[in-house]
Amino acid sequence: MTDPESPVSWETFGENSIDYNPLFETTLDFETRDDAFNWANKVAFENGFALVKANNGAKNRKKNGLLASYFRCKRHGLPNRSDDLEMPRRSQKCSCKFRIRAVQNFVSKNDQVTTVWNIVTFEGGGLHNHNVAVYKDGDRHFARLDAEEKTFVRQQTMVGVLPRDIKNALHLKTLEKPQPSSTQLYNETRKIRKEVRGERNTAQQMLALAVEAKYVHWHEINSETKEISHIFMAYPDSVKLFRAYPYVVIMDSTYKINTYKNPLIEMVGVTPTGSSFLIACSMIPTESEENYKWLLKKSPSVFVTDRELSLINALDSLFPGVDHLLCRWHVNKAINGKAL
Image (cartoon, rainbow, N blue to C red):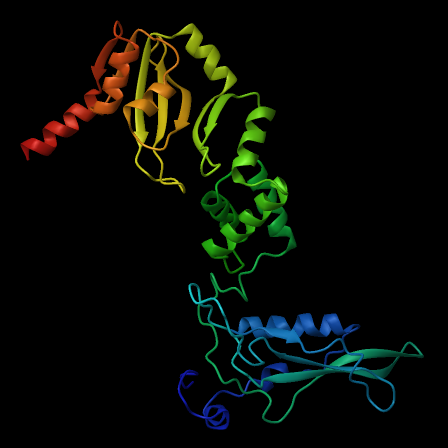
């Protein structure tokens, strides 16, 4: 087919396109309009496009009182305009004129007259003015989540499964169906989380869940911006382990990989058997000595860190009698970086 973005007219494009009417020519009788639509949409899906019901049937009656309804290509109608200059959205609509019609008819079955729906095609109505989909995976028309899949996504989201893992599980669950895109999965999980937290914002939801799970936590709020500037959290079982084995604490921070671009400090303990466990985590505005002093509340026997000078100074100031060791992994990394 011709590129739909080119300035050619629809008539010129239609003459050069494929007539899809023969695919919908059938003598089947359907009990309801929905049955007729589902059959027609299945045929359309198999050939790379989707249909929509053009009206509810009540506005288009025949003279004998029987109903009729149009099924149009999903890309019919004028393109929608986006007023968002930062995130402009490209409309899928392109005034496509493909259409078929579902018409009610009287038929005699078992000596009784009943009504059925039949598919009727139009001359010239089987042409599209756009290319049809070749690859259906990730296409929002073909790979959208149905009711059963949405229930599965909700169940997985509520137990804390990550969207990328939900996508993999969904792929194994429905191998015969086009797979949704990552955007579709993330949008669905985001909608579910928004429903769960209700009127709370992200920070309020986090603190509410911490209280519900009985986390040890404290935080500070910036007096000017009214935003949370510092937050510390520890799981109750982690606190019990730390009380039993407070001898070694390994500390390091991630570098601005979260939404707020703040350092996330992780404190890890070690048991006598060599197993490690997460003691607590904390988010601070910057890796400064004052922020590290705010974080450190309890004195262990040994601290293991990388060569973060602000953290080392804070440890020396608060725990002058506690041994401090440099992480062997960071030391080896630095040697390899300098030696090569």
